[in-house]
Image 1 (spheres, rainbow, N blue to C red):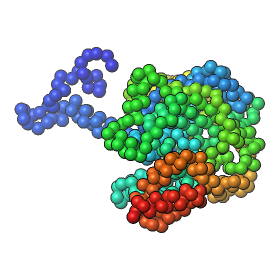
Image 2 (image 1 turned 135 degrees about the horizontal axis):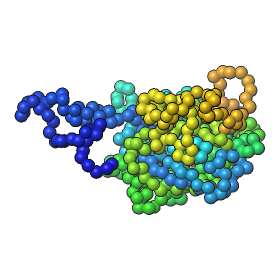
Image 3 (image 1 turned 120 degrees about the vertical axis):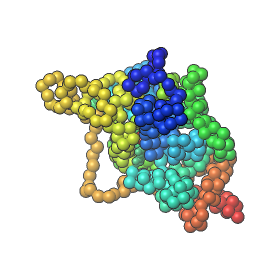
Image 4 (image 1 turned 30 degrees about the vertical axis):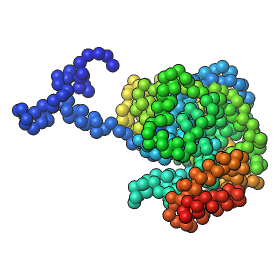
Length: 483
Ligand code: HEM
């Protein structure tokens, strides 16, 4: 902003910003005090709806650098050359808390990354966990209702949380992960990120691959115990946000080593797990993580509302060479985010500086709507046209996927080793005894807040099916706490 006198919204100089205009000394306030009316009215409209999930977050700009050749798997231009750099914006978040909630809580962390590529913005909207609680988008609103405030009590209720999880055995893997050490990262810098879903890469020759993204923190994993987090959340609700901003201000730029697991399409049908099931990982022994990039965050936003609150990310924002998989969760998300953006930020959300392409321009025939900035000037707004308007390429971003059968409300196909407990049990057995002890204490602490025995028993039974020892120890720990 340039220096000079304070003005009204329309630029007229302000004479007095301390006293409103009255009819006589001590008399009522006058409607002709435009400054007062304008200030009060603008203030009332400062908020936009918070995100329905992941409301609480922090963001930073950065640079993605390609470190290994992946051109035999994808034709995405931003990945076309070793050394090539692309500007990025990453928004971290917690999931369940509202906008003002504390950062240091047991909750997955969002890891939403925007690549400003020369072929358009590519958004990878992931989490710090490789899996999720459910595997069909139709269950997402129900799941989130149990994580948010109860309609009667107005508080988060452990009864609701555990009722839903215990009735959704597919959540056992993610819940085991969440109540383990990694469930409360010490900061956004000290955690990994994952694309979580399976996505498609496709190369110049038209071959397709199924891929899973991994972002390994170069700062090392650091976590908080439940007791440490409870204390920090009370003392400094903004702990993660502050840590990220201050690290970047100090020039300590956090970075992640980026890798990908790659499955040839032909192997998907006979793989031992359904490769599109978001409650499962692909064990690294089956598909090793191939390193191909480095992500560094190196610039703080100048204005949190404009650049973080109004930022929008969508799993449907693909670029040539990258596309969706048939994962039923991902398919639901392809709709949900654009819809949320249109409601939350408005129909021209894509035009805001943080959201628009930075390395190319958007050429559409969409026009007008609230807060349209006139960017298209007098250009024709239809296609085809004879006035040099933008044209289609006839080249799909991703390769077609073979399907068979008839329509219906079907479960995703089951593979040889698919069940809801096998990977939860594997995760438990991988833990050291101290890690198991902390996991059990964390779970028992949360479960003992549930009022109904049948819900507790059903929950314990899910962990028992994952691993007998896990169930036995958890049952004893809950009993000890409940007396
Ligand atoms: C079908 C399941 C899901 C649905 C319907 C859904 C829906 C949503 C919606 C509506 C938002 C708010 C978007 C906005 O207002 O800008 C959101 C945010 C977010 N979701 Fe999901 N979500 C689902 C599953 C997931 C999964 C599996 C992940 C991670 C792997 C994820 C990661 C995120 C992240 C990181 C954000 C915050 C994005 C940001 O920083 O702006 N979500 N989700």
